[in-house]
Length: 146
Image (cartoon, rainbow, N blue to C red; front, side):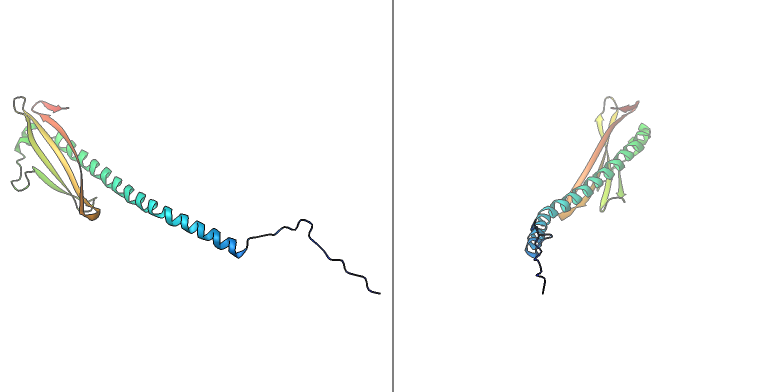
């Protein structure tokens, strides 16, 4: 006599794991979201790089201003502008691609003998756009004027 085999059934009847269709749908959704967000990341990297260039340029301009603040009034008067650029001094800015700087010294107040020293740093950015930062100070015969 044969003993009948009992059929084993799963009481909970749960499925475990994902089907192929579910996996494909999830992957497609994740890819669509990633493609939508990717340009934002690329743009933020570009903006961060430009902000870094501006910070470097501003630091260089401030250092150059300090050089001129350390000079005497006579030395500042002696810095004659170049006729081609109208700048008293031009200098390369090595830390920024295609960067250069210019120093302009102009009369601010002839009666009080005050000169304005302005530093401008320029560089090329994407699509040949020119960016610049500038800073200036007033230097008189009796010292700094803020």
